[in-house]
Length: 479
Image 1 (tube, rainbow, N blue to C red):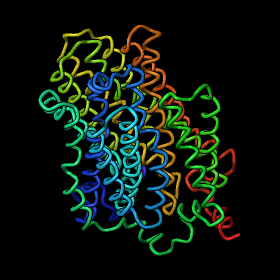
Image 2 (image 1 turned 90 degrees about the horizontal axis):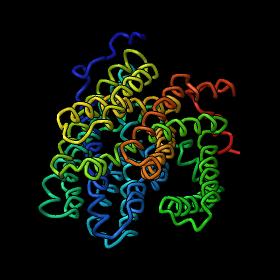
Image 3 (image 1 turned 135 degrees about the vertical axis):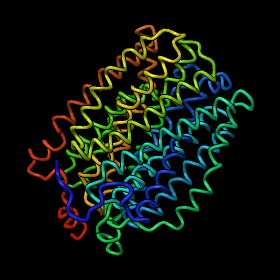
Image 4 (image 1 turned 90 degrees about the vertical axis):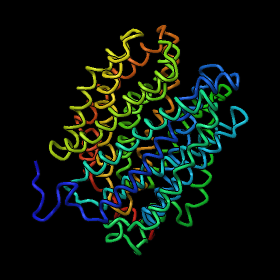
């Protein structure tokens, strides 16, 4: 285990006031992010009944926020790389809060799909810019803890959403749950007005903005082409995940993959295969975790017959487990190393996945305990992902590099509810489908991270896995 240099703080108490303030503000943003993002999963059955949707069609509304996440990670990350992490965070929280409130005014499937896409746009920017902001404000010896503690806010937001669901929806209806997404925005914006900029970004980039993701993507000879490509990708993703492909599904998927590869080449230079390997890793991570997060409320209500209050309580315990696991993952990551702690958490989670979905209705307390343990290990360990991904990018490209890689991979979350419902129809139950997806993909992710596949690809290409080909980008921009 590496020993931090003398004078480097290694505990939260020893951080400076500005470092603690930076963390707290970003933590609040993540909390609001979790609150707003999870709302659709809580009211999916109510929306389905109100709009007269089939179960599979309703599930695409969960996918809607993932359709736009790649663009939010790329565009808001580029803003963060060029103008600073703080302004990008503020724009992000405005986007997902406004999108959440608009969901309450939705008049049908397509309007709700569009407003959920706006939520995803802001959420993606929040993930990338807040994670880089905290990492670059904290000492390097504590950066696993920085991201682990930060991501604990997301499940706390889901816990608050679950509690709000249990009170608001039975009394006021599902629309008022979305209106509540606006309430805390003033407090967060107030806190962020007085924040310092991330120290590492200010020292290494500051006013020297000649080579950032913004200058790479929007160089004069690339600007129009990249804008057109973004529009094509957005349209293709909407058609694919709303299941309106008109028989051209494979073609549209191929267009999407090719488009992402084009952006990856521009962002990472010769390191683009490493970036794509990171995207694949995150995609699999979402496929093991998001079927549970997105369809667990539906499973508890539809398959086990639990009432709204019981579902709310179960999700509260699951969220608390997620939060506790994120914090423990951060501590373990700094002590054991990021990859070793990640793989250990994934394998421990397997002890909880199978019992959760084999448990019959009526065992409420045992369900709480199992959900707590499952989310603490399977989802909580993902608190290490920002550190794992961010290590592959230098400061001036980190926000967009992390945001783009993570949020393209997060399309696994868009596939997850569709895969869950499709497998459920074939296997005869949603619980079985969730078990199959979570169990299989957990092993896949553990193998990829355990063998350090992205870094191995980098070594095979004779490129350092933790530093993209920045000189190549500079030559490209100045040629």
